[in-house]
Length: 560
Image 1 (cartoon, helix red, strand yellow):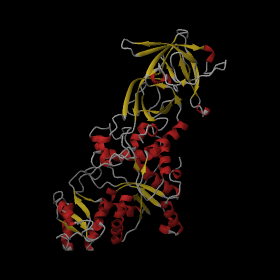
Image 2: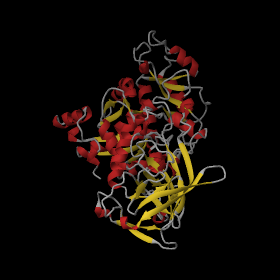
Image 3: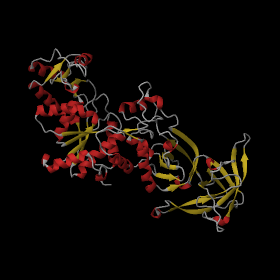
């Protein structure tokens, strides 16, 4: 795919970049970056940022860096670094040789801190975290200066060096910028630049025991790399004056920070903290659980990169926060899979059918198209015999008026096979229907009647003798409430959908699906789109995950 198709529609960021190029700003150079923190898996909101940063760079002949803002060793792990790289590549983007880490710049960031101390713009503070918060003031009341704010430069330099060498315990001292404790912007009230953390860093080990805060490291990392347009979400708008202040005080290259509205998607949560809670509390089966809004979860569920890129383009880039309905994303998935997914027949809740006038022991093989609208996708061979399975929902003993499937005395078409008529219903000792006795019309082979008679119902089936028995997992939305965090009186976990996963272990599938590769997607005719699970499938024993229904059943049922 072309990376320029991800954000092709006009938006205000494209207009800014176009104007900068026209004015010759940055010598006509464009550099963006995608800067995740390696403290969790990426979610669909990050996909929007990935498409935007990489897409804009490609569109304007620039480059996009991948940089890990790894400034908190307590929460960061190599497994997250590896997962993030896999996600970016899977979406179709390439950072080439431009992979960086904030930890690459720890020495330079420290030198920047020393420079600010020498210029009287930073100081070592011994207030506790609680005292710093109390001194900070409120939105309506100014803060007050720390008693350590007036320390001499040489004393601050000595204390910072002693912090670096590990002389002090965690939390005992911090380095703060000296800006304005009366600023109406709370972020400018002497923000913390460094804190002491005696912790193992995933890349630097125990080399450092002081770590820069995100607000200090982020802008300087952008500057060091030569980023021209630092694109971030709207919650960082109030942080921009601080971003600018650090860079201006240091007199270094000044990227332009531009904020856009983050993605809020209904029927899920988009907070890494909450997603981590779902994982650690066992409410889902991991970061790649197909119900999760993570890119890994969507990949395992069967979403395609093209569908996600199309979704990011469709929702656009704006300056105002808004909610996007989950149905928009699911529609993008359906549109892509409708064109690309081959068809197959699967019976999820099997009901046995015996065709009494069909010769015992005989087997026919039907040549069935893999895609009715795309003949170039070829055909497949589907066996047929005297005993088949149909979907239990495709039979009703006393059907309502608009039920056009199988019923006593009624004739239906078996997809690509014959017309059959139900003659008898067989029950077990509990009175449950366990089998149907039917007859078929040999003249209707292939699904048509020479005498011109019509049937209103066409149902799918699989041969009992040849069917593959497999597990199929029916995934649904993780929450029953569109905004799970919108009610302050309830916990978001109270709104988890108890039917977000149903495991069907006795499904019957076409035999040709037995050796299908993990990650392969199909449309199970009349049922929805399904994908071979990449974790739990084994050779000859695939497990299928439902990717999406054929239509938005939530809206139809008044859930959305």
